Image (cartoon, rainbow, N blue to C red; front, side):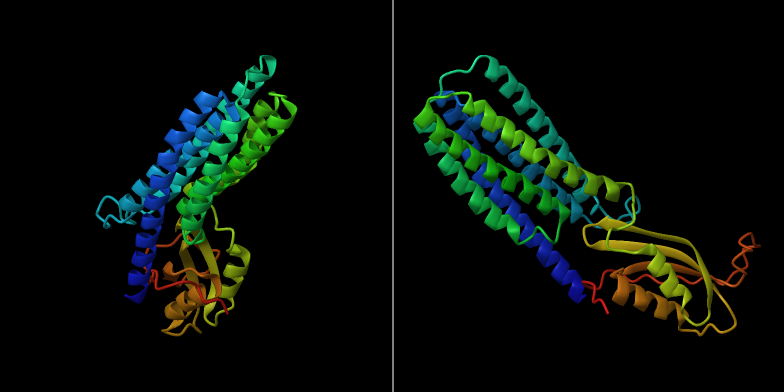
Length: 314
């Protein structure tokens, strides 16, 4: 029960962080669009485009948190917590789209560079930097607890770098008069975002495909279970991530005459303490490892360890 309360508190805290960051970012996005139009700065408009994706991403993230709190039902036996991962993937796709637009528009402006009002560009970019820093501070506390919040944090972080680039570009234009600096800054922002966006998309897609968690060594896990007295072998071993920080395991464990009654509890305890897996479903079987086609007269035992807290590694 203690874990349930702490998990709920973290979810509630993440939701408040996301709402506050959304309010700040949405308000300034409107100001930055206006500033970009008035100053004729593509760098400002590209930063505003990033802020638009930030606003969309934060809104999706908040929706993901709210949906994830829905209770388990017969149609969703694990609840809706994986919606968080889907939201992170959507955020990454939005960032790819924004980066593509910025690169295209920058290429077009290189051919016909327009006049840019560097002073107004500098003022708006400086205000944007302040908003980004506040939003990053708000989201930093939850980025290690949720891939969803981490995605929002990365977007605001990339936007902060964009604001720095716009400030540098405004100063350079003011002293040199070379307006092609503006689309050059926009290209730099787009190229800077792409590899980080790919990293987020790769991580969220891996989870959606039920890939093995990066922090779990399956070979080591299998060996650990098979070293238990009374275990002959392990087959049909699967480990995947339900949502950020919640790994799940299912396995068939073949036991022998040395197996003690507490074997199931011992295996589950080792999965928790050594591998951070708190939800396990283990089926005990009596037949030999090479004889997996049987008459379904096995003694099946299942134990579910439902998320009792963060991993305590040995």
